[in-house]
Length: 372
Image 1: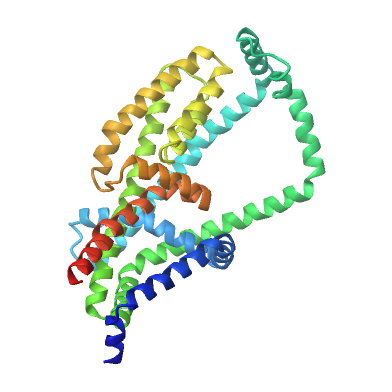
Image 2: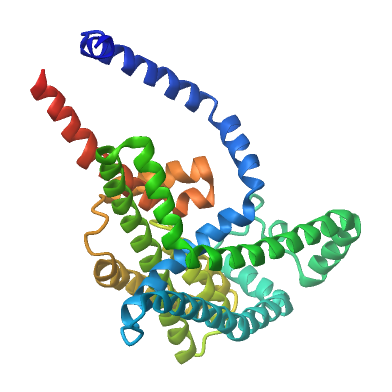
């Protein structure tokens, strides 16, 4: 009774709001230290976190196969079969990536490094024709010959051998962590129903049936936003990269594998990604054949227009419902706070915040207003 009377007091909402504000201020003012501590703590569970991420990305594919494998009547057999088929598809894609795309990338990089002298001459002539070669903008201070680059690279290797060995050891640890993460993801998908049931029982016991129902509905909506965004974004980037590769192959442009991979990867970045991919690809091609660079940039503009107005709306539909302004703000803030990961997750993050604002915060404030 005393507890209810305190909650009904006039000063109670103000006191709660002040406490929340103080906590938020402390968290924001100490955010770099808090985030560093969180990252250090999560580093101990690196393989587990990566395994959860892999399982989360593969799970929609496993669910799709589970719905399609109707000829397997027993559910206890259909789910493992769907999980195994999903991982087989992922492995086939990775093998295809290694056997087909990696040699293309290696060949492109080798060709690029072997022709640095001619590229240097081409760009130098272009700069001179444009009248940009001044004391302030001297190309010789920006680029050097391949012989000079090789000498600097050799000197760097000798001077930094210990750092390179440390980086190699770190790369080995990363490979081991990713291997363990892949194994963990297989176990997580195999036990997902049991794990979900255990978590549901725990939260029911902690929150009660009504509160758990609201939390479950909210988490289902968040999962729908994130899973659709991740899957459709991967599909969209694969389509854009493949179309770019076909176009460059038909026209006989060099560095098809390298540039197409850059275009596909940068397309994952919202708002600024396609622009970054176009600039990098155009810069590589302008050193080989300036006209190819012009054609590539025009094609990229057309491709991104089709992608933005045709392909993306068909894939995403109205599932996000977030304005371009808020996406831009989310990309900038997410990039400043969390780097590349913040940029990649900015869109689903702002979509979830929009869900909280429109579906929970505003209705709660309106109910409070009516009660007063």
